[in-house]
Image (cartoon, rainbow, N blue to C red; front, side):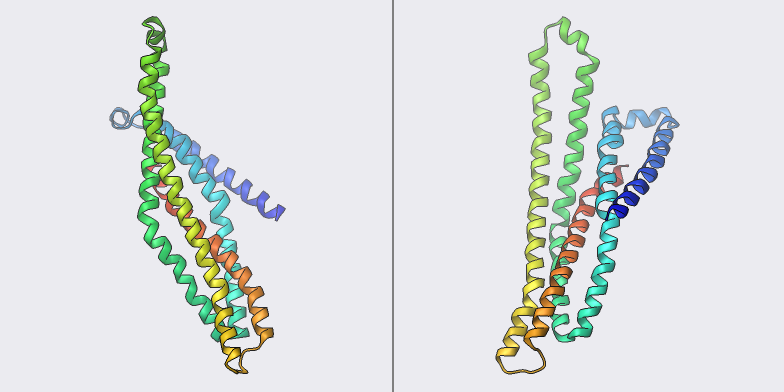
Length: 239
């Protein structure tokens, strides 16, 4: 685990260091109309907040989810060999995760994009205040300026709250779907045993429970990574 974290962190830092340098160089070579099209606050938000969000996804979710996917494929293959009927029941539950993400995709993406835009608006107001601090002090306009700042700060806080709420709902629903994947084969297998079938034994059920715990954990991590991908998509598009 230590080696994995060290390698992922090192690779992520090297990749995004190169990306930051290329992005900065690209902005410096833009012609004048570019700076009239994009406000300095929006460029600042992209260079700092959007880049940080993308970096966090890459380092915390993307590579780890690939590892979890490989592990999940191994577990699915093994339980198919162990008992294909119960394995199919477990695998059928996995599309539930995809359905939840499909339902919440627009809500996650739109609230994330709104949060990015409100952050740019907030940064613009801060830059305006900093650039005009001499006039603000000279004309004793502290209260008025803070009143103007308060509205954009509240707008960003509200947008951030909506986004956090949607992500919370998504993660809760994904965790509940993981519970379904975990217990549905056990319940159906138990029902089959009660009806006198000898194809499935209590030992197989216990073994299945062990492997399904690992599969459910990996499937839940992958689905959360997909939700994070939807969240970070507006930021990567802006970059």
